[in-house]
Length: 119
Image (cartoon, rainbow, N blue to C red; front, side):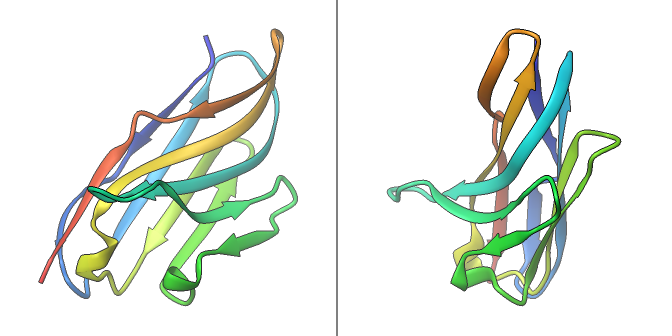
């Protein structure tokens, strides 16, 4: 069974930092794009950052200069380093990956991890 497991959320004061991790497990042939999304209460899920298998990145305007996405292809893991956190960054963060396994192509989501930034 291929799945994504997230870790690293929590409570932090404004201006602080957190690092999220998301590891893919199971029989995986390759992983294409990986990304982080977030969903705040009453709002739609939005893309925060994405990274291709070659390392090209994209960011939402609201996090540019503060968040950094990276990946370790040897560990099938994607990270999100979040600095200078703001209360408006409070949300459930989900990782996403396009995975090729023995059963074929699938798009996976993590279970979500809560990030709360206090003012």
